[in-house]
Length: 217
Ligand code: GTB
Image 1: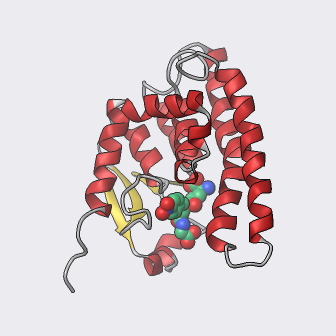
Image 2: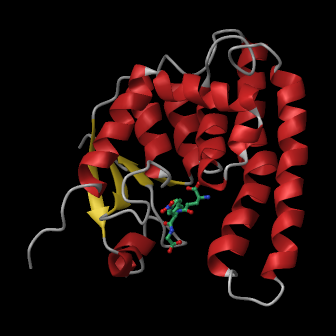
């Protein structure tokens, strides 16, 4: 069996590439691995067959022979470790690339997810309007620090790596809020990631599913 990942049957973003299968598709494209996609409805994501692969009933998952993985950080790490293209050869540079992967999901992504939660899931609560600017400012604080590190560099640490793939993917989620554009250095960094041919292929593949007209019946 080749590589099979799961994705939303139809992403709520209508094909903007914000659902997390895009980062796995991107890593697969960067490392030149062919893959198939199994599309899941929301009920199917919560059914026992999928819960056996993903204990939290989410997408994406990754299957390859008798290996089944969930968590995008782990899936991208697995691909980077097994195939050329996402980790540097030098052991210390590789350790730093892994550090940036963790920084993306552990330091930058949490406040960005808080913003999604307060805007979408808690938007009708009486305290949402008060909480929103606090969360937005927490994100701005982190982004200022990231800008201080990135400076004029093209990527976070030397050549493009899995650390950049994860960081760009996380920052992309901010675009609808307008906060990313407040930081031209980071907006340009994200645009460099999106311009990579592997990202373009990944984006087009998810768009083909999510922008297609709903099938009849
Ligand atoms: N930490 C896990 C990982 O990185 O793999 C998180 C996985 C996750 O959050 N999966 C989401 C999911 O399955 C899809 S990506 N949600 C359904 C559920 O939990 O029941 C999150 C996402 C969803 C929709 C948009 N969007 O429409 O803009 C963007 C991102």
